[in-house]
Length: 517
Ligand SMILES: C[S@@+](CC[C@H](N)C(=O)[O-])C[C@H]1O[C@@H](n2cnc3c(N)ncnc32)[C@H](O)[C@@H]1O
Image 1 (cartoon, rainbow, N blue to C red):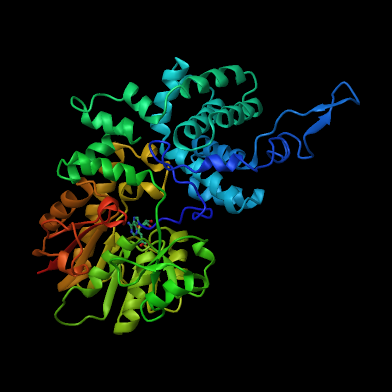
Image 2: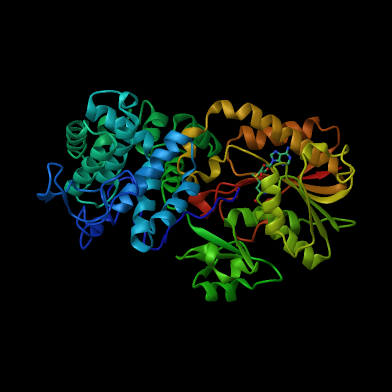
């Protein structure tokens, strides 16, 4: 799966880390408007007109209540929307930044606070519970979100402690009046240790409970840490490196569409750098990718390099016989269909792109405009029943299956806390059904690439093994490693491939290539 780029001008944004090492937020409080000079919010918040307001008793002017500065206010609103309305930060935050007119460093600061607070929520909650002497779940939700934001600033940015505390107390004054004393006391307690000090106090012992330790130290649910550790063969050091990557701002990659853009020229055009692995990748170092001319003109699209690699692997896998009918069985929103469609155009092939959700099918149509792609808004499991999806018809088939998305947690900051182990059974059933449909759709001798943006072995190895065993056709595994660029490190023993953020700088994409006998 390819997620939208993290909003804001990420070149300016301070990076959050486990310790205060990476934050550069401290500078932000120097040279910024005094609190109260800028209005905090529209409508129901402190007045926009300035630092002094009219005394309610009439006439006499006195200092107004300090307002919350706009970046923190926006971050708070985004975090509250995620928790209150089940919103997605990568959708609500850009809209809020736009509505409030936040750009440049202010937008980057609001983005860092929002994403950082959401990623670290589990550990922030454990710290707040300890500091407050009461379960964080018993704190009024608006005050709880304000405390999370304040605690994140204290432990993961270089915002000076006094600024983190006072701005959070100001925020609590507007969202939970009556709790300012409580918030002040909790934050002062939090400020008594740094992030490492809190981990030392609260995390289970590394020796007796290594999973519990990593979960608290790097703010992931334990079941996810366990799944990562299993997929990494029990290597807990590498698991820790992966968890650290999940807490970083993700890179933004472009895919220079083959035949439409040259990656080296595109890298010059966007002041990026050609990718390390994908022949089409360009790494961006800043800017708003959606606004680049190459993207608006359809010469390139935003796509994680790992997604490019797995789609390209299907296209380059050796195949005997006809090679003109390609199928993408789970196409929305169209990232891989965009790349496969451009490759199909070069090779005289045609791609059928299937997507069950209507709005996502429309996105696929947009993403593949001008390419030899037919979009079908239907269920991929109807292969054989839908005349447009005949059995044994296609030469190359991609199944980029719906999955937990555990391989792209860095792009979806709240996702790790929303996902549950109970999501796995219905997802893996659907994955098996879609892969079985793909094996029905491909002709004998044709190829199926099964891809997930999750390294969870239940969604990867178990699904592929079960589906290929039970599909009713002879199926061979093709070694996927030679289908990736020569010299790419860390691809394991094959025949499947697992990419990793901490090894390859990509999302954790899984790839299995199957040939129908
Ligand atoms: C992982 S995403 C695919 C990402 C896409 N390949 C890309 O690169 O942009 C999985 C997609 O499968 C779609 N989907 C889920 N169930 C489906 C089904 N039964 N048939 C077809 N598409 C389905 C989802 O709506 C979602 O858009």
